[in-house]
Length: 336
Image (cartoon, rainbow, N blue to C red):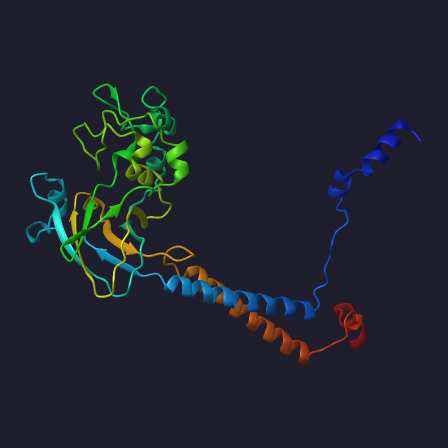
């Protein structure tokens, strides 16, 4: 045997050769009717209870949603809302009343919800500098932040369109003439605070230009403590999203009336957006979302239906397993 043949023989014994030639040992389960029916029954038995438990957890969440962007515009400016929101001489304060229909156990999470707001736009998502957020204005590679990179030949910290468009509506909550304390600490991810925003990086030259986008930042507070900014900088994948504003650490009883004093500063009127205020409790599964529970119930119910159909077909058209007379070519020979 030549050296070439020996080498070829060795190659044929390797796992790579066996894999490429599809000769590796493999498990080939035989899907008998009994196995198929059993699998569908097990899926149904597991998924339906899981879905019902998940639905119950979701339905236990109490939620209050109040849209305020229309009602907080004075009647005289509702024809031209853009001029109202851009005119700093017009007061933007507004009051809304919320009715608590069910007992809400603390902590009660406060969200602002924006609709028709495309934070996932490619140009918008790229308009930031993660290195600048972490290291400050000493980092000069901020070309991705254009057109919000420099102002008066000075770098902007934080730069980019995302920071420039920071949400700046504010909310105060009054119940029975007493103000409810809103905890605004720890509303951002701990990993973001510790590893993505510098503890020694302070806002610089921010919102000092002629065109003001959204909220301003306190230059004496480092970016790692500017949790409003950190929450806002984590962009949403969908045009309708909620972001955490704070937490109310007191229970709200059924039939309580809560008055919200808010500042309607943020401009969503230019692009037909909507603004909503959301108060929500939470469960062991998180916030209110019926999709997972409904999906589990649907999958489980469908599996049980398939199992029943296959069982009836198997009982009605039972045949011996491995009977070769049912093969198409054997049927033709028998009929001939």
